[in-house]
Amino acid sequence: MFVASSWPAKGVLLLLFLLLPLSGYATDAPEGIVIDVLSNHYEPVVFDHELHVGVAEDCSTCHHHTTGTGTADSYCARCHSNEAEQELVSCQDCHLADPFSAAAINVKSGQDLFHVDVSGLKGAYHQNCIGCHKEMDGPTGCQDCHARTEEGDRFFYSGQFAPPPAEDSGH
Amino acid sequence: MLSPAKKALAAGNLAGFPDGMGVLVDLTRCVGCRSCEAACNREQGLPAPDQPFDDYSVFEQSFHGGTQKRRPTEKAYTVVNRYESEASDKPIYRKIQCNHCNEPACLTSCFVGAYTKTPEGAVTYNSKVCVGCRNCMVACPFHVPAYSYSDPIDPVIKKCIFCYDSRVKHGMPPACVEICPSQALIFGKRDELLKIARQRMTKDPAKYVDHIYGEHEVGGTSWLYLSGVPFEEVGFDTSLQQEPIISNVKDFLGTVPMVLAIWPALFTGFHLLATKGKGDHHDHGQAEEEGEDS
Image (tube, rainbow over all chains, first blue to last red; front, side):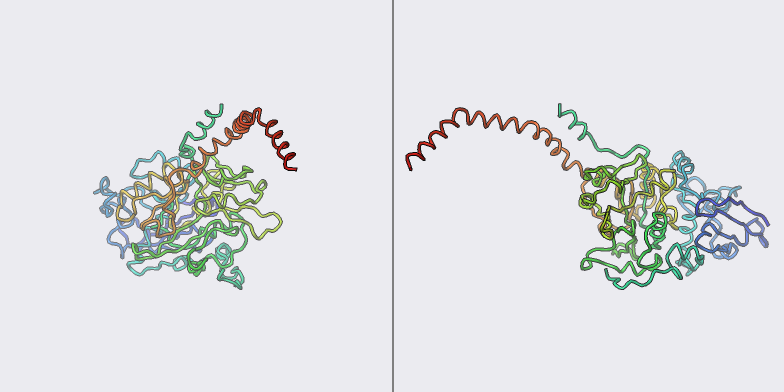
């Protein structure tokens, strides 16, 4: 078992990532990954990496050009076609968990044109996943993947924290 | 003496502060989850909503005979609305809040100077000096400022302040941007956001209409929008001028001091010239006539 990395809680987002152990892979790909970036409002998600390896055409469907399996995205392929496997392959290595901090914005300003619009971690997950999930009938509702915590319910004024029904909802 | 001041006032199209921040809203990414509304409510300490923030029946609400969708209120500085468009096979969601104009009409309409455009780009206001005249509500081209009608004693204007006090001032993104799961909202320097917006359009021209709403509208706004369908179909006013609203009245207002200073003296002079030597004669004649009549 190895732990990819972990950061202390920052703001409302707890940035903690855990890569669970591998087995049955020739490579060091993890079986499952616990994603609990949003643990303040949502229960952690266990991302079944093994299942997605079977579903995706190849690693580059999600990992762009870092896994040495070609490059699916034609935009990336202009520079990164036929690249060998790289050291950094996990999502968070490139997609910052805190993409709008002053430091991150400064780094971005100095970034070359091709990487100026790299999504943050949360955006990368949701944008990358939702397309396939719609096509393959995967879960698409918020709570289909991560159930809300009590704090989440309070935040959304939902469940036990729902406001009493309004008498005149038409106005 | 007056003309240099007038020139300085009319000098320009303020393109915003050079390092001003902004938010790029990509409507093609918004999934209509309303998390931004919940985050705004929490961050700004607003009262409990009428319905839960995960109640999507609010998208069915319409007002004024179905002509108007939800708008920001004193209880909600931002709202998300749903639109249908022939150009899209799925619904489109659009978040509304203050667009934080480069040259805000609310600011220029406020005679007590309650509004401030901060170097970070936020348009904030000081509710302590607000007298509740509601000029800014009329002036705003986006109909954003709301009024605390619920407070009969001291009603004030209420609107999105870009989370200035609690976040943007300290280099943090607004609460709505931070919570957005699909990063339909991204926070950064306005200049950089324009570059990113252009890049997205260049990369995928079929996905976007060729316009960045807010780049030039009413002199430019800190909040910018990309859309996959024509902007007028998702509630944007595309008839707005490119010039700041103040430009409409700047020239006229520049002449007001001149009128006030010169006209009284000028017309007093005319009057004196026109009536010189006539007054006594006229009075005399009138008196004579009156005398003859009687």
